[in-house]
Length: 158
Image: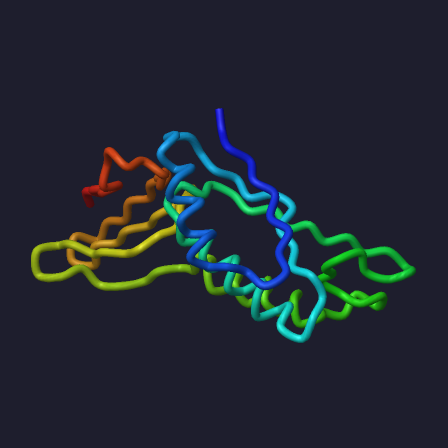
């Protein structure tokens, strides 16, 4: 079970979007936003970014699908690239957010009690922990899930 929402916008009403997601989240099933597009206009890219940030931040939203239809005769409603596959401003927004929301490699040193804390997006990770004094290394896989009953804390012993 899940809720699927199409999202075809002109000028987005952010409080309404937030309230709608809050209301639907009470069903306690994943929400997927599909067919997100923003009508052409001078603020198309800005509006797309506002919408994507709002829905991505909502804890009930599990996925976002954009409705972008390129064809040689031109763009249907919203395109990410031109006919030469060069990014349009909307494509720049999507690329920027993917980079911003992507988890990159973490490297750090544990505190005096042996703890290292990192914020991670949901997904699978391979973790390598080295202890230079004990001359040992441990490799472990872990998965961060959208589980509200757990705080997703992992302990790795070296």
